[in-house]
Image (tube, rainbow, N blue to C red):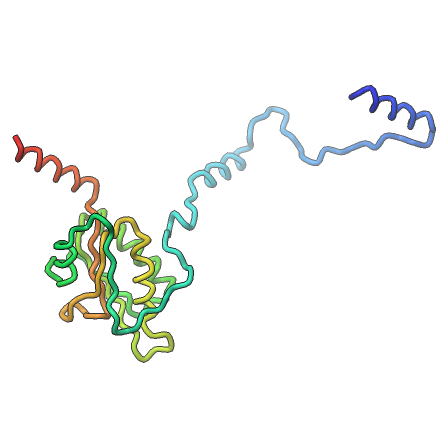
Amino acid sequence: MSSDSKLFKDALCELGDVKPLVQESRVSLRKDGKPSAQNLLERRAAATRQSEREMNPLSGEYIELVAPWDPIEFKRDGVQNGVYRNLRLGKYTVDARLDLHRHSVEMARSAVVEFVRDCVEADVRCALITHGKGEGRKQPALLKSCINHWLPQLDQVLAFHSAQKQHGGMGATYLLLRKSERKRQENLERHQRRRI
């Protein structure tokens, strides 16, 4: 306490009616300084809890609507034009499929994230998502528009394009996915052996 504060306190006490306020502790502090078992559980849960963005990175922001008969397409930098052309023409074997018919937007959002993760883990390079065109609906092509908005947000998706007629046409989309780390390593080793 500074000397000015002490002088002020002494002057008030000389008046007689003035008594210092007794301030109660607002937080009870543990004397031993160790956190309680409940506190430890809460801390551990908070540290391991994934944020909503980590669990589902797809944004629910405004989605620009696409017409039912318009193709949707996307290609990241670095994807070769020939590879993209083959994807667009349906020349790659489709190794996994996801059907979003009768899904709400939220259900579809979760299903797409999980599907892409599963495909990458299973080393699927080309997949197909069937979303429908949404013709005759109150909001035509809603899921198609969502797919067009969501897929570029997923790093694992290298490219996508509306499917060929035999695979669903404008109501389905081909996906080209990144190689898993394991597949990348295998390719690197195979190419190194060729050089030797």
